Amino acid sequence: MRINIPWNRYALIVELADRFKERIPKFGKTLLQKMVYLLQEVYGVNCGYRFELYTYGPFSSELLQDLDLVESLGGVTVVPVISGVGGYMILPGEYSELLKKKAESFLSDEKTLSALDNVVKNFGNYLAKDLELRSTIIY
Image (cartoon, rainbow, N blue to C red; front, side, top):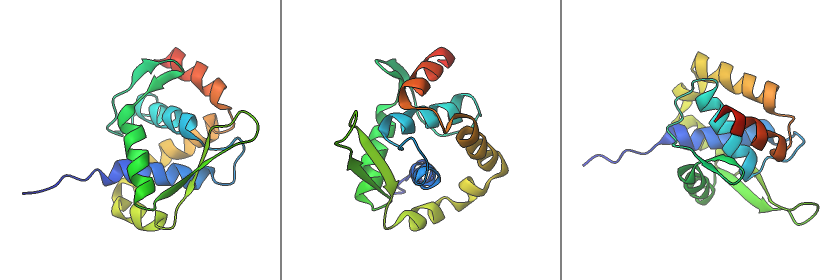
């Protein structure tokens, strides 16, 4: 029996946390949802998630489940933010490099790399509420 582990999806979460660790605004759960949605729908990266329209724009429950799993594997750390509007901050975890190595060919693929660079460059400075609006329009 073969178990199909979606390492690409897990590594994508870690890669985004790594790319946003020094950026403002903070990288939280809403930004994760919108960045993955944009990667998949605008930049054509096969992330493997199904999104549906939700209160704050496109949302994937599978992505939220993967985030919890990646956190339990030590790929990311999800920290509650108690100041300001609250929410969460997603940071690279102790085993982030190990998880990225599991999907090295996916992350180093020219299309994926270009899409990651572009989504961070073009959308990385927006607040969650701004990305909610843009991703909803795209949806």
